[in-house]
Amino acid sequence: MLVKFKFYNNIMNERDSAQAADLLNLCRTELAKRIVGQQAMIDGLLAALIAGGHILLEGVPGLAKTMAVKSLADITGLLFKRIQFTPDLLPADLTGTLIWEQGSGTFSVRKGPVFANVILADEINRAPAKVQSALLEAMQEAQVTIGENSYVLPEPFFVLATQNPIEHEGTYALPEAELDRFLLKLLVTYPSPDEEIRILKQAAPIAAAGQDKNAAIHAAGAVPLRPVLGREALGFFRAAAEAVRVDEGIERYIVSAVTATRPPAAIHTTGAAGAEGIYRYISFGASPRGTIALHRIARIMALFDGRSFVTPDDVKAAAYPVLRHRIVLSYEAEADGLDADTVISRLLAFVPQP
Image (cartoon, rainbow, N blue to C red):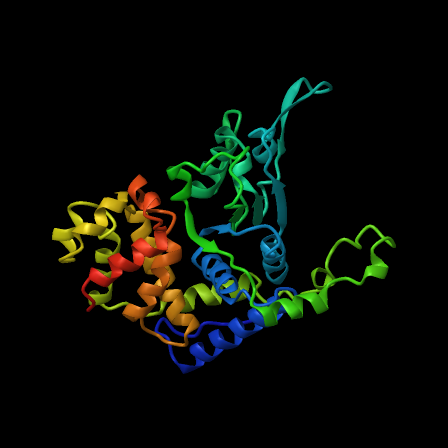
């Protein structure tokens, strides 16, 4: 049964804050039945779902990326579809196609797996550009064009794409236009030794290995989850996030943080004096879509922290998942061994706080 929540006011009060904390704890508790640790990933998934954005998950194989996405779909009770991206995949395999009906002498529409609420685009960088681009219209406009007609996708519509950062042979890098459609890029890291011991204890026993077709699935993956984040609860979370206050000084700080990623005029528009040296590592900065994303995620992070207002620390914390895939680094950055997070950290050090 879905857990019901109601937002009472346009301004956050103690009752609303308590309800948000209870709902967040419910979601974390349910996901923890299958996912050990990975708190940053789990909070990022929940934040993007509330914000109505898409997520790019990056991590080496075996870190429960697919299980996390499937588990997220289970606690929402929404329709889930998994698409395995391969080099021979065609755009019609995602969106659907027109089928000739011999009896009626007309074409009928056969909708593809993209017509679902939660889409797992597994190993998205293994498909060529024409397949990746088939998701652009879906991700930005929540619709798909098949033949001469456009078809609206279910609401909510949420794409979670995974990619492996260590394999480059047989892969196709995502174009910047598509990367910008992802609200967040989350980095999935290795578990701690204590967490890995818990994972070890949850693994399926050896005796089950040859007994049935589901034996390959970890025991944790079979744990049923309650749909605690249904449409009503999701609507409550969105209303609560909308009520989080953002002062004008924080809004200017958000704009300054994003503008600081755009060389070379950023130095003059943000007042980031002394930051000139960092811009040799940046080819292109984030677009205004990044500004909107940073504003949304900062509010949700404040909500998760039990506050009705955004602080500069919320903005800083949100800047990494929001901006790391929107900054195009130069060859000099690669030569010096700098990644996007390091560049973002240096930029934030120069942007004046309110």
